[in-house]
Image 1 (cartoon, helix red, strand yellow):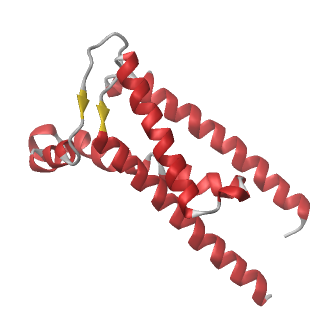
Image 2 (spheres, one colour; image 1 turned 60 degrees about the vertical axis):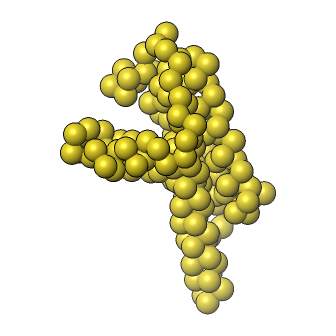
Image 3 (cartoon, rainbow, N blue to C red; image 1 turned 180 degrees about the horizontal axis):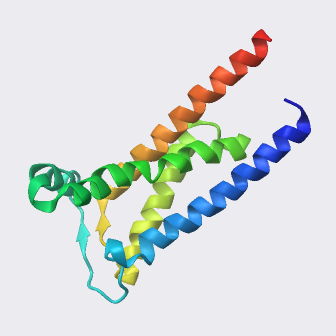
Amino acid sequence: MNRKTKEIIRVLLWIFFIIYMVALTYFLFFSERFGRVMGGEYRYNLQLFREIRRFIVYRREVGFTSFMINIVGNVVAFIPFGFILPAISPRNRKFLNIALLSFELTLSIEIMQLVLQVGTFDVDDIFMNLMGGIIGYILFAVGHRCISGFKKRF
């Protein structure tokens, strides 16, 4: 792959990353469909696995959509972060960097949700978002290693 192609891919990844961050911001702070209405009340969960357990135990009562959004959605929402960030930033190609950045971003989001009274500050969300960032990084690392191995052979 020549230098120009790499630069085009990098620019496209930056554009995708910016769109992803804007969409994430919208869904986490402004989407009425997800209960994001300003001026609610202070809601928080500081007990790890409490809400995860509740959504698993009462999955029939809360419904499939709520279960998927809260359990699967929190993980899937951060996979692009863990995948794209090391692709656009070579200095962030270490596992620990992505894990810490995923944690910092999700903690910031949760604190903002608490302060703005939009959504719920939930340590389970922090855990699941962190897992999503780590899964994204693992996908990046595997893909990067496969591409590097392929280039060396040919």
